Length: 252
Image (cartoon, rainbow, N blue to C red; front, side, top):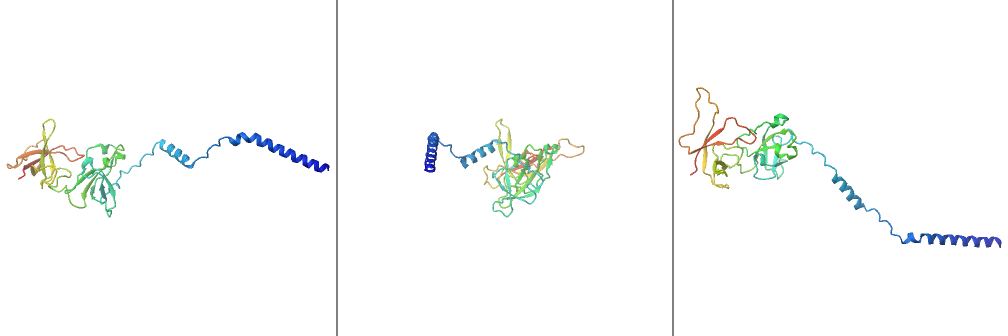
């Protein structure tokens, strides 16, 4: 009988303790639980932190392997030339291949890269590409190089009369350009009249005019039938000591 009373008393104390626990936990039961950490929130925070860190420097690409001779290219801004052209290298069997590197200068570094030096491209070059300007991430790396490009298919603006290409050569056509100051110059255009400007003169002779004439030398001149003469601008990236003079006749 005594054992039964103790079991009953023990059971009552256990129920009383459980009841006090429930009363004490009741406010926590109605409290707002903290939201679980969302994977997307964590990802966003990580991405934001990564974006706030400074970007790693782009490794230099302007070495002798960049636009190597024989490689092919795709124009990023069709119509550009000289320092305004921008190309990307692509495999020669790619459907995007538009031009091929026919000649490539060595990559100059340091002080040599800052000296004026043209592409020295062969005849028929459609674009003389300034690789320093083409690879914009390396403009400040004191490196310089040129690539001579020829289109894989027609048209070939670098051919005589084609309307473009590095420099003006015999057989090219030009039109007069007036500057804001009123002085005149010439610019190249297609000889077949299919260009943006109508051809006015065709170059039939060129010669280098010596700044200092040597004793006994005979200075060249334009033929009598030449109507106009003008100085040809130096090719992109060059500094011509002696100017090249072109002799041109009117286009019929």
